[in-house]
Image 1: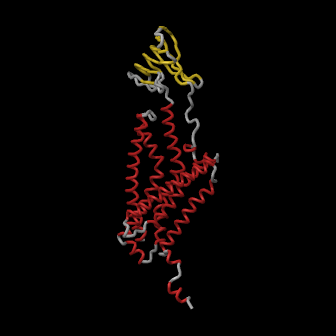
Image 2 (image 1 turned 90 degrees about the vertical axis):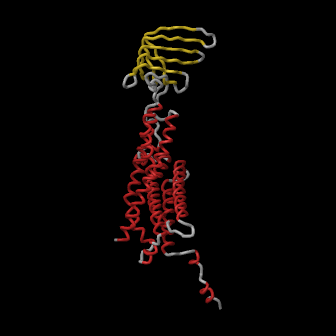
Length: 369
C-alpha cells in the first residue's frame, strides 16, 4: 500500500540519520570523559578505546529509543508542514490510521531495545567495571614501566625497574624509595618478584641492600640482604567481588528479588515499555501549528522524553528503597503513559477540543422557555 510504504521509507531514512548523529555525539562525549578518567588514573590509558566502546554500548538502548522517537516526530511534523497530512486526511486516513504503519516499522527496533536493555546493558557495565577494577587493583610495581620512575598511590614510595618480564611479575635491577614514620629508606636489588600471601601482596627482593636514614636525627644504617620482603597491598580483594545490581544478569535479578534488584529490573523492563509508549506519544505530539513552527513540537517531544526517563530513574530509586512495589510501579508509570497517549491520539483523531464538551449556544437558546 502506497500509504504504508511511503511512511516507512521516510521513517527509515530519518531513523538512520538520527541514529548516526546521536552515536557520534555520544561517542565524542564519552571519549572526552574517558580520557579525563585516564588522566586521573581511574582507567588504563591503553584501554581507553575499549572502555569507550563498552560505555557507548551501555548507552545504546537510550540512543536507539531517542532516535526512534525523534524520527517519528520529525517525519510526521514534515508531513504536516508540507500539507501531506491534509491529503491523507482528505483521503480517509485519520491520525489513528498511522499507528499501524508506525508499529509495523518500529517493532524490530522495539525488540532490539528490549534485548539491549535486558542483556547488553548489564554485560557492558560488567566489562567496564572489570576493566576499572583490574587497573585499580594493580599494585604499585605492576604500574611501573621499564626505565621510568613510578610514584605509589599514597605518594610514599617511588619504584624503578630496569627490565621486567612479559607477565609483569618479575623485574631486574629494582629500586624502591619510601618514607614511613620519619624513616627514609632506599632499597636496591638485582631481582624482584610479586607473590600473594593470603589477601596480602608482597614484593620479594633478592641480592640487594637497604640504606635507612632517620629524618630527624640524621642517623643512617646500611643493610645488605639476600632476601627481603616488602608489603605492597595488605587487603587485595578478588575480582568481581561485591557486584552491584547494574552488572548483574536480568535472570539473576529475578531469582533474587531484593528491593535493589527489583528496582534495577524495573529500569530494564521500563526501557522497552517506554520505547513503545514513546512511539505512540510521538504520533500524538507531532501535529504542527504553523503559527509556532516545527521547533516548538520538537522541543516539546524532547521535554517529554527527558521527563519520562527521569520518572524511570525516580521509580527505580523508589522501588530500590522500598517506597513502592515493583508491579504497581510498572502499571502506574507505563500503564498511565500508555492510556494518556491513547487518549491524546483519540482527541487528535476526532479533532476534539475543550469546546466540544460544552453545550452549544444554539442548544442553550432552545432550552430557554
